[in-house]
Length: 598
Image (cartoon, rainbow, N blue to C red):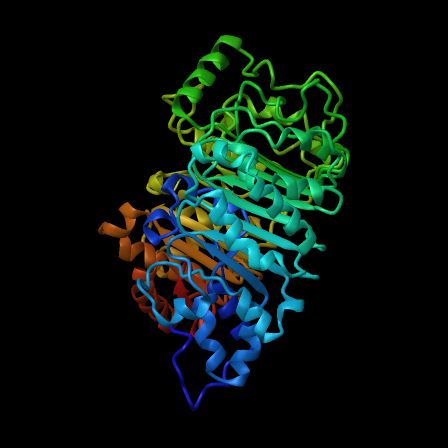
């Protein structure tokens, strides 16, 4: 989309809310991969889901400021809301960058401090971005930030520090540089309201914040959020001085895609922490990040915890071997012997790639009060894990692995686990998502005859199921509002229930009306076909089956599938709506929206 393109007749036609969302979409963005000009490895870029986006779209919305007053008013809040200092060989001012674009596929990030001062918006600027295009020296960084640090920015509360190409060897050159020490003192004075620091760096020192160590110390009383991602290498400790001070942090994120080391959390942050996201950590030293003395009783206010474990294949193999040797499936570190539960106020837990007995590991947490649970690729999840202890659970998300370490030859392990989960009554659960890796989308899973999750309103089953199984499932979930599935197989003919011979068998007279309608609350039906099914001869039958499922759901408003199948699905729905011999009215299909699933 070219926001600078002019439309004299329609400049002010778009609603303000839509304009704001469009501008925000192009302005706030997670840094792109190496091929897109931001210098990230592909492996590192996969971890941005846990790290905040960055305000890097100044050049993209600059043209909107000159389109019309209506556009300018909405775009200016974003454009002037972030001060930018760009460092490196490609660094220019924002106007120079806009006038001389070089590569439209690359993100244009340029200094705008002088423009902010001239415009009068500086007192309202809330964010500060330091962006290094290329590796720089300490003197270059200090020189680039000098102009910014000469002014006081009274309402800037967030600092974004992005330096994906910094080499580890430079840290030793910077560690005792007087220019950096002076710069930190100037920044501390220039940013009186600073509460959040978000850093992405290629250095391993101080969580990628070694340039800002003194600033963290200076703001330790007012700093509330710290997010750090090492794009290469591994993270090591914060500056030693930081461990000696009590920090008032409420949210802390530490990500290091390539590390196999244990990340250690300064215990000084524990008392005030509400949210903690850490990983990857070593699976055989689970509690090491949280304490050096073995005491974990300080995390009394923690409500959100995300743990990602090392996913290297060698570590997984070693974990599986250790699991088999112990028999019970729990590692020595699985169940902590100290205070229980470890995090008494915890209500949201995310665990990724834990290689040992996940059921035993979860005993460390207050299961009866956790409201949101997510387990990602934990191989032993299929072996005895149950939702039964999670009596307050409101939403659950599971990404399964189809390879079961305990029963490597059991292809039915996923089907058995899914059946068990759907049959367990969980009184508060209203959202459930069960998926398998996208590369295994042709994996076929058999669903049970119905479900006992009677309160469920949102269900996602990306596990390669049979379309025929959806009828009983929908009948057993009366509160369901949205259903998203991946279909791997379809057996029966889509229109068989219209046959005069088959109809009495499928719909007995005394239950015809009840069973003809599958749901009167479902609004969204999303059916994506597996790669094999979409490319095979039964594709048309699967789409027709989807259309007839929708025909039996009078409340449905939207049907989604793959973009390349939308046209064929629309044709099937139109044919179903035109049939006059259906056992119920299909007129609602005329108003159904059919579109692509994202």
